[in-house]
Length: 274
Image 1: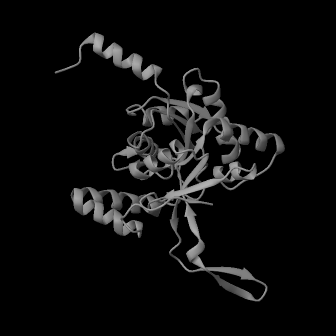
Image 2: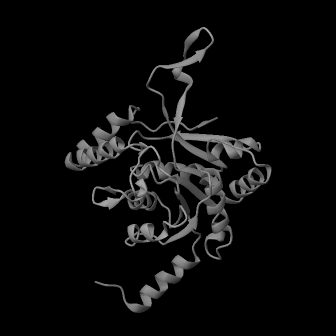
Image 3: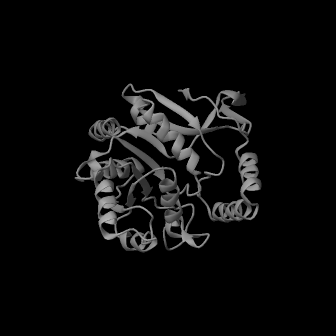
């Protein structure tokens, strides 16, 4: 039975009063390796824009709001792509680098009367649309347990060689992890760290590194190989195939497919600090 008007208003008030959990979704990249006349983040994946799939994944994992950072002049493309978003979406304009775009997005959250009440923020690349909900949940759980900066990571499966003057040498891959997104943070701390970095003109490779630069520890949680990054056109084809494979396999078989893709023990793993 549909909810009565008073009940709906009461639910709306509860939502308005609850603390937001914000997903800062980065979609301002030029995508030069992908090519094409429109950003890769609005290209279609399983009938929806890549960015829409990414926002839905963040919502499924527990985010209540999204701020999507887009390149100047591309706002209309993204408004159309996210018209059916399951959570409220605001937009911010990106800068000349990803780092500057993250800074702009954090400032947009900081000045918002509602979003500035959030204590947690998850920074996610729209180019990783298939991140499973459990990964998002794990990042949020680590923050709830007291972590300041959290990132999902997966073991490196390829043999890695370091180039040197004499040729190359093999690196012990058992100590290596490939870092993914969403990366989760105490919102005030990551905002302050990015403001310092912006003022100093420094550079980092990702957002947890920004926190680590200023003395904060980084915690790792289990990632997923489903969260592949769409960089080239072939990656979009692979993502489409993965979605169809898991959807067509049924619930339990789909879980097995994802488990094989992850290459990880299905039992809950312990978190690690890095």
